Length: 119
Image 1 (cartoon, one colour):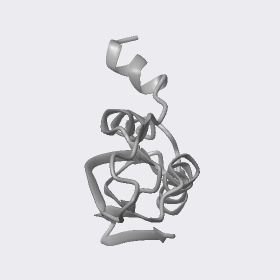
Image 2: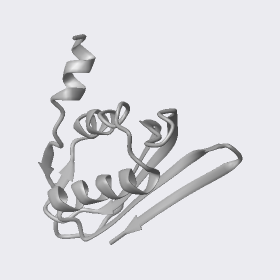
Image 3: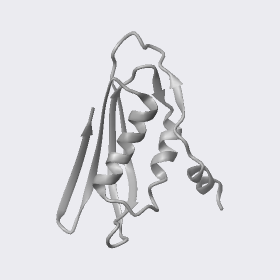
């Protein structure tokens, strides 16, 4: 197993203390090279995952988030399911004041899908 594959396999979301918990501010994260597999065909699905949140006590460390998101590349999972799984993991771990996760999937077969989950 290559070191990158090992890092992805062992990935867990790492949290840091929020440096400014006394105020609301917005964190926008874009992950433009997201991939997973279509559960019906096995073909790869490509998307941009957009995460917007207002932190409370914790913020997510970006490298750990990158590795976590890369962990979906070999999983057979629908657009709706993967967007909700990511949302649930961030909601559970961060406990943010506000959270939105958008799965903006590339068109395939002349169909474009955007999944938006909000808190």
